[in-house]
Length: 147
Length: 147
Figure 1: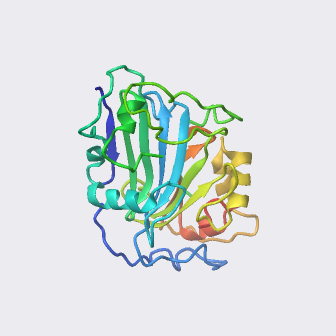
Figure 2 (figure 1 turned 120 degrees about the horizontal axis):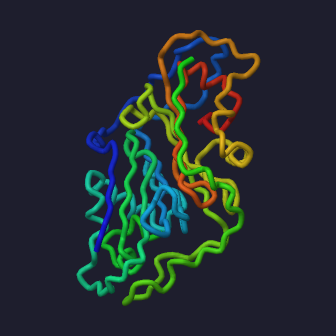
Figure 3 (figure 1 turned 135 degrees about the vertical axis):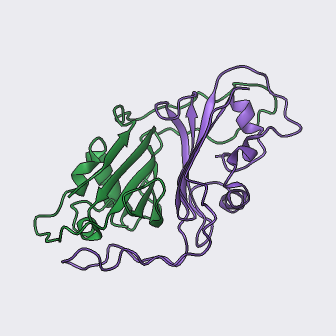
């Protein structure tokens, strides 16, 4: 199975609880706040499945949102499980793309690419993984991309 | 004001209604569906505000989700207005970052960077814009990044 994986900005993902106050008061004039500061590091992601191996230019077949703070939510079908997987594997999401032990897929090359992008614990995240075919996606170990 | 803008994969954003059936049946074994296909091009985004000019490595201060199909939703405070702005300006989001006519901000360089990433009408989107300071963000014309 050929695969393409890319991961950005996750080396310092384990930020933990963060007090975020940097924006208040800089600049001048019209001091209406643009939004409330949060007392936790934000986590908000889009999970998607793209037809083909080119995540940047291919047609996106499905896309859901996932938030993990202050509590799991979004349009992901299993947000609590997905957030737990992210907490356990955020620095190595390839672990979620491994085939289950009982999987039996052909090696046909009809690729689909999954992507996780947005923010994880206060850092930008951009991750993609290409499965040889959708059977590989359906039979992967994680539920994060089961959307 | 210095600014950095980056936009990816939006040249063919106007996909309109799309029937998406490509995944079904490829591969083999264990044919349980990984998710229902949608009858509209998916739109799901994460909007974020990062401290500093480096969106990839800076600390994310705030992040929200936004979905625009089949109807506006997510944790964005004004999803309907934000989706309308995206429909009108998706190929040129810089239009939403222009200063309002009544804005009066200093030129202090204490940058904040906004980002929109995820999926817009079935195509990946990755957009960033750096404001010289948070006053510029608070006084921009759009509500998309007012999070």
